[in-house]
Length: 422
Image (cartoon, rainbow, N blue to C red):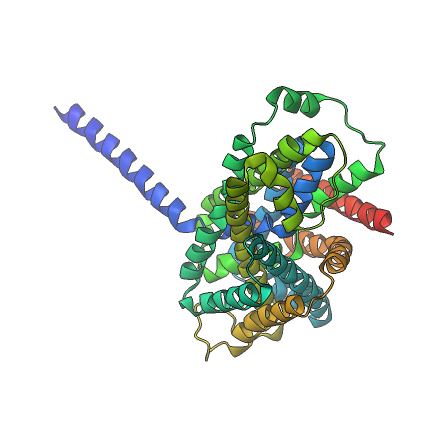
């Protein structure tokens, strides 16, 4: 009788522990998933679509290979943020001085502004599919983005961001609906790759460059602090980051498969430069109504969440360098600089799109700048990982080896991209 009672108590205790762990996981999930969904922004979608249109399924394996690369970089970001309770800009200021902090934050602002213009232009392209003028879509989106900051708490903004971002997973059923040739997919996955082709290598570099962006590091480190995550939540934060890494790369893979199964069937190079062109090219294969609706939902979701993340990353960075209050948990009157930068970036990007700035030229310029920034951004992250982590959370030798390999790989491909462009 006593043994039965003890066994029942143990079973109840185990179930109770599992329930607690599940609740803790659900409470921690958010920063990783949000930043990863934002990673699949308008520029990333164009890159994946171009890969599928030009090279079929050959670059699909790369999307899977990039999952661990993305995870290791962002995991280090969250580990630093949680254990130090300090943002990326603040740590650079304290560790390397104000000048380097301003260099890092200033270049982040330029990159973020370029990214915001890209997101706005993507939504403009969606509006044009339905005959809606940019003079309606741009002010409306700007107003929505600014209104989100009125939510009052970080956790509310996070929920809103995930809600709009999750719509981008619509690309997954869209890829299935396009009826890809799975036999050809397998053949091109395991077959020889055209490594002697400069166009192919340029897209390899572009896909890698689309995975790690400066604002991702600033955002996730700021998000784990605003959310109030403690050292006890690091294990669950890693799950959040890894799950997000898988989701974003599956979405990228889905866009690649979608264009490979449609545009790729035409068996000739199709230059793709903007979202509207991609959507117009896909609709004959998916059907006018289905193609437009799926593409509009997915693109709008990815552009909105990216705009939120980019704006917040910039606001946190400037607040940290200026050493002023900067949190979504503060009221507007308590953090005027933080909210001013958040709104200012959105307004400036909206104006640039409305006045008709050459978006393709700007996109190329932003890609070049991001490639130049990668050695600096990742260099600061790795240096902080070496210097500021508490003893019990320090990087192990194998982790350092992997991070150094990633640094060399990403920086080399970034420099290769610049060489190709010039």
